[in-house]
Amino acid sequence: MKAIILSAGQGRRLLPLTAENPKCLVQFSGRSLLEWQVRSLSAAGVDDITVVTGFEAAKVEAVIEAIDTPGVAVRATHNPFFELADNLASCWIARHEMRSSFLILNGDTLIEPEIARRVLADPPVAPITVTIDRKDEYDTDDMKVRTQGDRLLAIGKTLPNDLVTGESIGFLRFTDEGGRAFVGEIERLMRSEEGLKRWYLSAIDGIARYQSNVGVRSIEGLEWSELDFPADLERGIEMTAGWVGRGL
Image 1 (cartoon, one colour):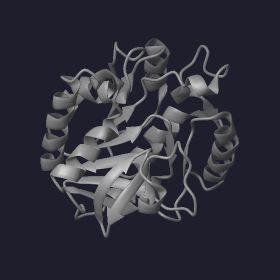
Image 2 (tube, rainbow, N blue to C red):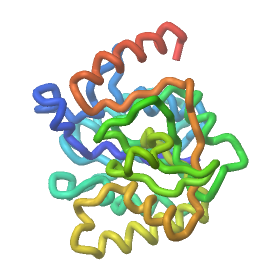
Image 3 (cartoon, rainbow, N blue to C red):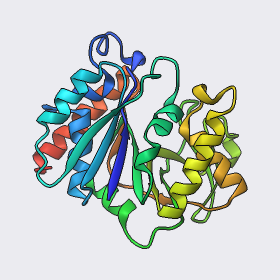
Image 4 (cartoon, one colour):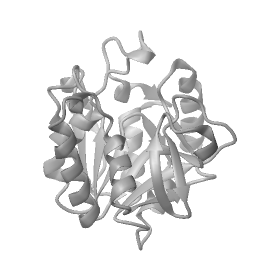
């Protein structure tokens, strides 16, 4: 199985920590965020990983070279528009990697291996599977979802609270069919005036609303964290320290 990790961003909300190193190289319990991601994916059977780089790409490439995961091919592809564009452009840059089934993982999402195993469990719930979690309250920065059973109806940060049934953790699975639909929507959006400023999940929202072939898989009870603000760092350190204790 192939995975694409979107790691082009600097992580300005974590400044000054990310002044000279991108968010994906922030250290947690002795390993970079990127290395934790690679290890979790490889533990679940992923053997081909593409990392989309941007800010301080050479430093990320050096870390990739040093990651020791036997049997797993890890390589970089560069997004030269990272300062001007959001992550839809990173997906556009990596679209040549989307010719068969694959996973996409946000570059700022820490996941334990069991999450990847659950997402990879067959059969897939739909051509595109969005991994979700649920909690009592959602804030304005959460990537909220509206679902009906295992079907995704809508995804976005501005969904009305009375329609919200969970949040995306930033981890998706695509079958061959789902990948074709996604690439087609990426290419359509990148031709629009606002294409460079779009999140890739806006493409998923469009597919969910008009093609009805997007599903969800809950990972409730498993450990993950989005690392976006300084307050998230303590959670990441605590969580990964527990993983080290479990031998992950």
